[in-house]
Length: 264
Image 1 (spheres, rainbow, N blue to C red):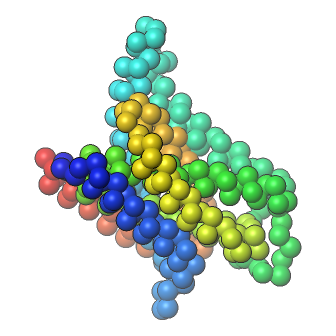
Image 2 (tube, rainbow, N blue to C red):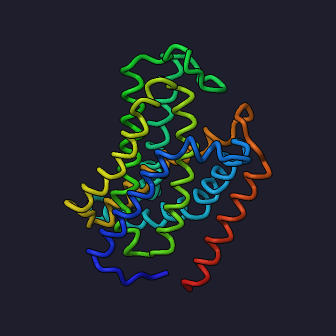
């Protein structure tokens, strides 16, 4: 669906979205524990939306970005089948970096407990926690840094992206709270919310104008989202509900189909 937003309107809209996402980050524990709604339902519903977003929106977006990468590489050397994989190698890098951080946290402090215990010693060393938190801050900043451009290319898709990412934060919040019960609760959420606003500030001052740069950043984000979605929702040990997972998946897929059909 096209959009006729001006640059100023898209920047203002991106700020509104950044504020909404920040609020969702801070409210994630309350969202997971809505009165009368099992935590497994809210977490799995959010997971279903996020998985549908990854397969039906994010991965096709990465594939489209491969054209921009191919054109840029074609100006430097003769295109080869390997160069056609450039954008996917960036996505794989994002996946690998976040997986490496997860393994580092596991080795430093042990696997996360099934349920956070305030009386349990903070497992991982402070340095590991700060590194892990910093990676999620970059992750969040990338989301809002590219938001103004998303709004200019399609308001409806940008809104769906916001919904998927906002509920995805419910999953990442659960994982970080369980792994770092003390450190994360005292300032981690606030830092992640601030990173969202920070990403918008950087985009307002230094707007992403290169299609190639945006394609690479989107691919890097895609790899990170892939790992975090599957890590938080798929493992059988998690508190989850397959029925609510399917509800979220089907709902988001249906909304995306409607928006796509309306834009044709």
